[in-house]
Length: 634
Image: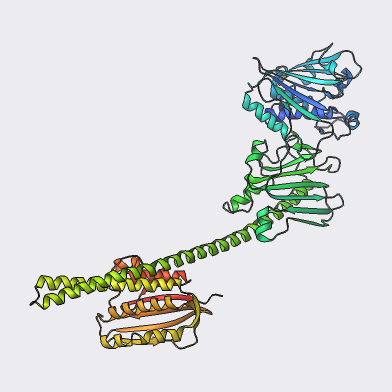
């Protein structure tokens, strides 16, 4: 088909009336943000005060009034009636403030709140106010063009606006939801966080009134809490200043400075200036009660940029990092509060997305994002390092306290045990003496009755057992109270062995020393080590004497495990410890082939008291090995 030459032709978009719903009700995420958008419009109109009034009478209504410049019919037609149009009018500059809006769609936030909007506006000097009524139901028909929807207006005398030289009032009727106390509290929380708590926005305040509910000026001063404070700023020229303040516990326990400040050149940036403060608090309870939620928020020209810092927004990947480290990240998100401040004029490439809930992912924003994340990581690194050192210091301190407490208890027990042993031995000697005298007296009068002989023998045996227990108690008491000294382990072992030579020779059990030459130096209680070795040798001799393969044998060995750590062990070739007793050898009153158990219990207690450790392993092919670990500690 031959194409005919034609002159230039054009097409034009014709927006459907339904577009306003897409730009308003469906673009704004919730009612509280919708009110905040309309408050920002009042700020851009040069207002020094915006008042939100909720009438709780049924049907409820909402009124948002400001004392800004107001609009004439011509201005209203040019500014309000053209979607997407934003004009840098002079009233904002006259108020000495930057303008917040740039999309020209904030007015459609009213559709999120109510079906009907009545705008009453008056300029200074005008006698009457302009009244324009919007019924958003008229915009629901997708086949109707926006320009074909009639918007009625009239002029009237308005006594409320007469209080101001100028201003605008938004009357919202047929609200899309029934507001309750919780909704009102959420709105106040949203408005409280709308303006930065640190830098007063020049000549501007927000008032929220609802009869019977908390009302008045909305403000949320941030009360600094105990914890870490990290402030940093980046100048337009690329110089970064950092200041970190530590909590008192880090200053006192770690000897860290209470505050550190540093300055350096960051380099050329596509954004800036930026200034921010992170607060990592010990407890967030009072801040949450004051209306602050954990998170790092962004404020531009003093007003919050949504949704940064909200519970479901993790723009710094703080929660993600914690999850990736299985909950062990140094920063707990619920205790972190942050405020990042930028300006529109000096950061023109950090632009809003269409619904003004977020910034566009431009290269400049990505650079800005990396910068803030890196600064957060600096704080996290400081907190983690301090925490690790505090944990180490705390554990060391706790260990010292525990050791001191053990020593105190041991000393008290030792003193009590010495007194108890002395007091028990006297009546025990009387019992033994009386039993012997009774037996001698009866023998002088004739042969002893078998019952009398058995009874006096039983008394004698039990007295001897009790005497042995008292002797052991005395040894333990002296061992617990004995001081640690430096001793030659090899020489000490040979000295103790000499006390048992006769017993071994009489029993026919061989005794062998391995690696027991002089020169192995340790620090330990001499009394305790003697008691432990005596107990091991006595038990080993008893077991070896009953060995299946005679002659029985016992080996004493010194093994160096590290530069200043030794293992002293005693091994026999007896039948070994029965399986049911192996896990309970060092518990009270466990009787086995190796005694009644008290000697091993006392050995364990005394060894631990002086920093040692006793244990048991099976010997091959049969028998048992008991050992004590000794370490020379400075």
